[in-house]
Length: 117
Image (cartoon, rainbow, N blue to C red; front, top):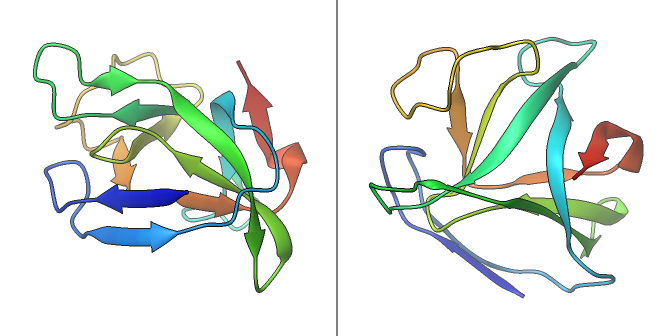
């Protein structure tokens, strides 16, 4: 599979990557992120697109080969990547909410760090 993310307001950067799929993609609703807290935190995740009327799209976990870990889950969403917020946040999804953040994609090695929809 190919993943292409252009520089956009959700994510400052761009990617054009190729991954070797090793299973079927599933909708994912939460990921455990270790970026902000060393013990990790559960975050809601959604895909993000360039559609101004409906920017939210499903996020998916796709099992892929990972040269460093053997197999991982590629977390991807819309053409603007994915968006995350802490699980306990009651705020609606908003591109300009400073408590939320965007990523082009994530690679997660442990299925226990995922919750599926």
